[in-house]
Length: 360
Image (cartoon, rainbow, N blue to C red):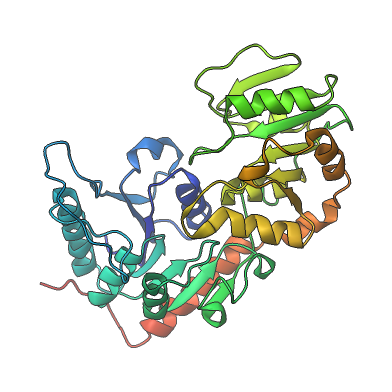
């Protein structure tokens, strides 16, 4: 079956796939294909009608010789002599050959964006936060038909985004966007530490430190995986939660990293945030946290200040944040906006194509 849209899903964490699923739900059935290296792990969450192309990982296998690599200014990741990388590129090119009039949505990879463009396949790049002014990002952004940011323009600037004028800001969204979620939060009662799946600087020593610094009457809820934990007074370790909203309903303040999905989910759940930006390439979380604090949606504690912060005072400050500011973060029409925008790009690029043909 020929695919009108193909969505390349980056494999780090689960946020890229969750975003892809949310966008795909806005499209008619069978019009979009997913392509990625870690789709099997989340197979139960991908709708049945979506065709998946499973790519091998692009890292060295145990029996491959990891030779000396050179850093390249125009690519982020291009190791030499990796069989998986060669195989995955061949699979992508085969798909492009069989689907020459597909529009590739890339979330995210400079290399995949440029590979597609070199094959004559038009691309739309999903923008992430961060200072992406390096040569590789500039090349990818220049080669793309459009950049789509799944967040508000308030969370970006020309200082970070060299393609600002080429970027469509669709608004943010999460699995809770447009849904009415009940809240049972009681002031000065419960707060949460929400640990994402993409790597976090929130660990057991920090949890113990925060527990010691906040009021003993405050119930502390830990959402996310912690390898080992001790019994701490008035602290509940919930582990991974498929429905974290049920725990968060009792919490009015959430301490979290500044990952995209967590921020969007907490904005939709109307939770006041204290963000601890984790170390990410291109200062992705630091820049997102900066904009969130600038517009009054969150407080920010940088990693170097984790053990120098008056956490009780900070929780009290967070409780005074204006919840209405969170309405700037997400948009109930975001995925529809993206679908309509992609349809517009498709029509513009392929308006002279009368039928799809497979290149032999």
